Amino acid sequence: MNTENEIKYLFSDFTTNEFRKLIQALKAKSYTFRGFADFAKTEQFVLWRHDIDFSPQRALACAKIENSEGVKGTYFLHLHSEYYNLLEKNVFNIIKEIIELGHDIGVHFDTHFYNIKSEAEIIEHLGKERDFLNYLYNVDIKTFSFHNTNAFILTCNKWEYAGLINTYASYFKEELKYCSDSNGYWRYQRMKDVINEERGSLHLLTHCEWWTDEVMSPWQKIQRAINGRANFAKQHYLEFLKESKMLNIDYK
Image (cartoon, rainbow, N blue to C red):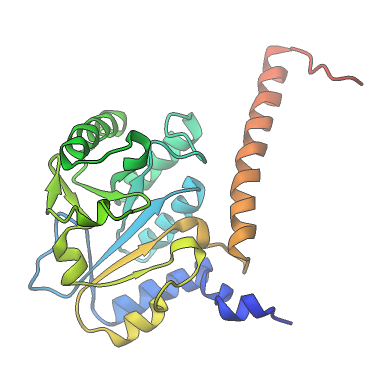
């Protein structure tokens, strides 16, 4: 029997099978999948953005589905995430594979890390993160998204900062229909309803950690991401001991 929350928050919407169906629904309505730097305002397009907050692994799963459907998205990388490290070899290789699948990447910029209070500070720190990610992945990043917006960030409506297109620019907020899965549930409207009802161009935001093969609650998904990272680190240590022919010493 479905629980009250499972019904209220539509847990069954957030599976990889449903993710593929959303893509197919957009294709059926002749939407063109574009990046933030290569769309034409005269066409019917969709900008599908993925902010990677918790799980590069789930991001790769979504990237593979998009690639198999012949479309692309934009994956925004968080340099200050508490849940993954872009400098870890495993994570680095995951992002490289996402790029090799034909997707764009951008900066998921955390103003809170720097305690930013002005647009000048955004330009300074965002430029440094752009340059670092360009170097790390040998790409030309063209866009960024803010992480965890606040009242100040929502006033930063310029088209670009530090030479990067701002996904929170006035145009994207005012001219496109927007839909997001923030925190693992639909904050305003179901994405499938937006796609079915809308005729204009779209700005869709998904966080891939919410999209799993089986139906789960958002809390279960976060626990799995955290435990998965911990288990990977433990296994990495055990393999290091084995390869180094060193002992793993405990009380017993």
